[in-house]
Length: 270
Length: 248
Ligand SMILES: Nc1ncnc2c1ncn2[C@@H]1O[C@H](COP(=O)(O)OP(=O)(O)OP(=O)(O)O)[C@@H](O)[C@H]1O
Ligand SMILES: [Mg+2]
Image: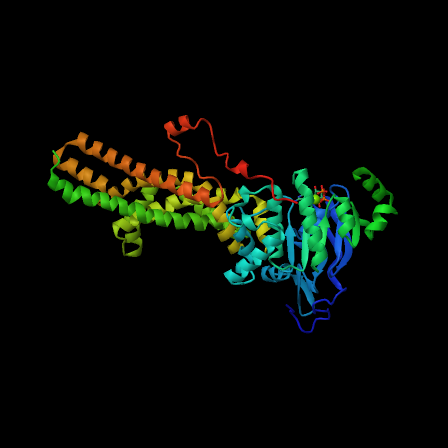
């Protein structure tokens, strides 16, 4: 994926423990509303990071930015050593073209709060469509991969149904399988259980725990399920007004937060 | 009275010409509608602007005058002329295609943004998203307004008779000049156009049912008065039968 051989930055795939995601001075505004405020942070390969914070603090915007659904106003984002929104030409950073963005984006998968399955495709095609048409897998390959994933998420018998014939919990599992079918290095999860009926939440969270434990996918996770966050997270980032005001391992953030805002926030939701 | 001879010599071929004009101009209108309609959702303003201009121009233009222009003005300007059938077909296709583009644009705009985002998250290209996600989902919404438009177009094919295309209206007019029997001739024409419209509507209904099944919606029951009465207000309970279960 490297573009310019003479560039000074490290273009090699990161070895374990190196920075997989890196935000440098990222600012995003919607009108006058500064949603991300000169944000810097990085995530190492294989880590599970949970983003917490009050409503409107910018958590979703971070994930949408990584998924290139919104663009930053300034600053840079690097994924796996490549700039996400920029290309280097003769040592100069320029806005990236569509194909460069798509190439870098292939490392990233996302699961949405509202599932967003394709209603015009059966479960199996929801999962195989992108591997076939984006990654160029053969139909057989993609289908056998999809069957494995459906087994993992426990939906083998629903393979030939349309999304509208599934419950919310089942749809969300299909959405997880669909994202995993692209073999992403990074998985973004934005409140993936908050649209579910309460009795369906535990099943989906268990599945995600499973995936966190058995794969080396890097996860960025926005959730209000604090027990889940405590279980899977290596790091917790506390957001407020577009800034990270506190970060650290879950034991520390949840048990003895330093910042007053963090304390207030945790008291409010626990 | 209308002789069998005349019917066979003029009317039958006229019906066939009407169907041909309808077929060709429908195909052309569909191509124009999808092309202009999707271009009007482009992220480049210049493309949207040009496609929007096409729509505005052809919406504001009389298909009849445009047909005259193609048949009589173009030959003067270019020194060659279209076969009348093609003047008529082009004029109809381009005009009704403009209306159709509005249907396509509207239906595409009604596809939830979340679907586009899910497509981006899976790294589909813009064309792939259109072709595999957005158009298939918008398609069932397009069919009922397309049906209306198709009927309008079908009736509009009668316009080609004024540029000497021998469609069934042309045959009727010819016959009236010859026999002066206006009443039976025009009654027959009315019935013929109505029958065509009826057939087209049936075809479009079938298409609609198939399209809805193809986006995972329960195909609609036949909405005859009788079936509606018999089944009460029962719309499909099928979807709700499939909830919960299998989690945990
Ligand atoms: N497309 C948009 N246009 C305008 N404002 C937006 C848009 N998207 C987000 N915002 C604003 O950006 C701010 C941050 O939104 P974001 O969705 O990132 O918050 P969040 O931390 O995910 O909140 P929540 O916990 O409620 O999901 C909010 O004030 C929101 O109103
Ligand atoms: Mg959010």
